[in-house]
Length: 200
Image (cartoon, rainbow, N blue to C red; front, side):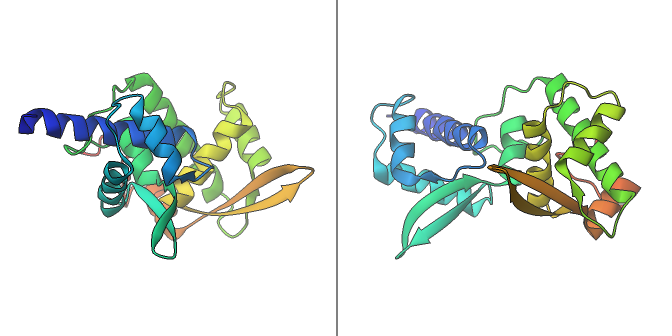
């Protein structure tokens, strides 16, 4: 196989792996199951190839790995990996995301609104229901609870909020409190590719 084709194939597999993990962000995936998912894109994918892809993405901080006895046990996406999937950042080692600009702008708007709400109460945790109510108040009525929770998880992965979860009636409640870095983003002293606009 020519080197250019091999490189493009690796970039496509990395993109697919990140996309699968993004869709299942709450559920770390066993490395073995990722082999089967990637075989849809390329039937010749082996377990060794998947381990190489995961190692590459871990070095870039796009995925986090749990190991057991030195072997990869499970893989999950990080907030930085979510930025790659959403198209908020580009990486030449991963095929570019086909970004729907309006979708990325909406996600950034939601994240910014969450941070601005939490900045009003910097010393206390706010529940996901309070955050969702604020988003509704701001006219973001299409946002549902699971989406609000995703953005809380995302912001915690960027250390912009501190997140806690609590079980409640068979569900999980997400609570968040803004961090100093999150306050810096709200006040314009710091930028984040998945939250702020016009980063260049």
